[in-house]
Image 1: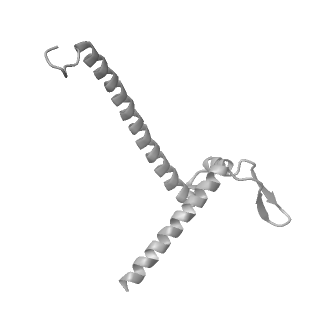
Image 2 (image 1 turned 180 degrees about the vertical axis):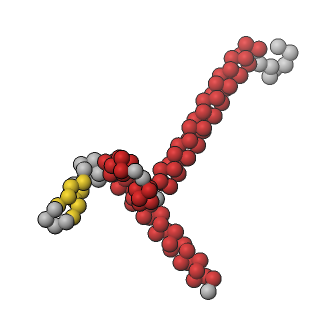
Image 3 (image 1 turned 90 degrees about the horizontal axis):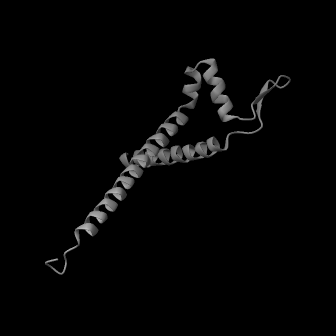
Length: 118
């Protein structure tokens, strides 16, 4: 070592390898996070247009959507000509509440913009 601040070559090489591995791991985690955000965006987009998806889907797909939303099935009461659902999918319940909150916030924001432009 010529200088007080010189790092031995073996320490330097070992440190560089460690930091390269950590960097690769962080980059992979960031990619996964980005993919998760895209997935969430897609789910919200599909969920916000669920009625259109239902309307435009085949009977088999409609059944899959129905079973996903209502795991305890949908029952039909012939005497009252009504449909009954005992239980809904908890994930979709939460998504529905989030979507309604988002839509309410957007509506309030649009109203404020309209009032300010008058």
